[in-house]
Length: 330
Image 1: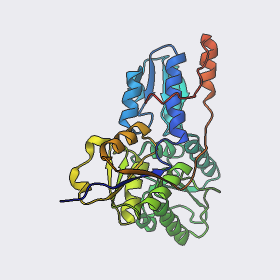
Image 2 (image 1 turned 90 degrees about the horizontal axis):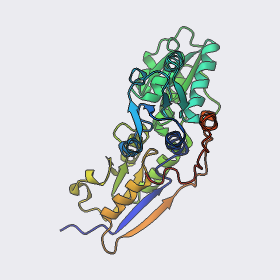
Image 3 (image 1 turned 90 degrees about the vertical axis):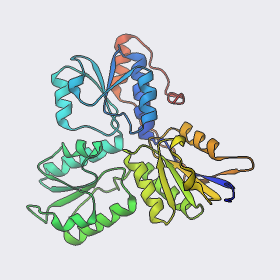
Image 4 (image 1 turned 45 degrees about the horizontal axis):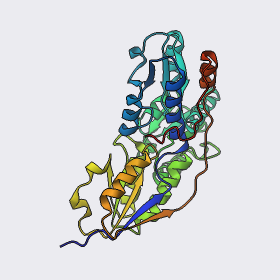
């Protein structure tokens, strides 16, 4: 008979990053100051629980702008959009509130700059991810999307002396480093951003998983199947030799995963609310089970809200509520 779990280790940091908090705040604030209905193009962040909670508050989620009536208010998701989408919104007179994460916007601006300087651009990322689709739209004739180091040798560019690289913000730090190293071997003159495009929160959560992996037998990562950063956390743990499983919530846990495990780790992707972590810990923690936080770094990052919210609130004579505790109800 297997011994029960003796200790649960919680990774820190985990869960919401500043870009996700900002995006959720934007939707909630828009619902409070905009004339309804308020539409959101794509999932505001990649988490079903968050999307359903915002839908229950009145947000209408759509896949494309064709589903949004003319002159309505539409919010762009945290993952960013291509210029083509922005032009279409302007043409149709839509009131746009942009919730793109500022760190994603930074990558877009880098793509625009390199394209204007006639560089070929290698974008490291997953071609089907919303963030990559949006960045690719900035310069589709100049950007080559690759996901792994093995694709570097197949790259063909007009001028190997004038090539730059960018990265999706939610990738594995280690895998991305391997791809950049391969690019530098193939193209010694390649240039890149002065600072790593992989966001601070992605890096911190991966560092926390690496720290936790050696101390637990099983690691549960709470996040959506389409969340890039959550999937990377699973990969990081598995690369460290630890059994790791991605779950949407506590209902996905299989008893056989935990068989024989005395120490279980729990963490969450950057789009996952803390309530799902609490529910998971509560389900795992029996009598006498210790729960311990393992912190690798403290985060204190906050992004400003888009000016459009202030403008709309001013036009309607409605005060813009404080952001304090805006998303705690999730």
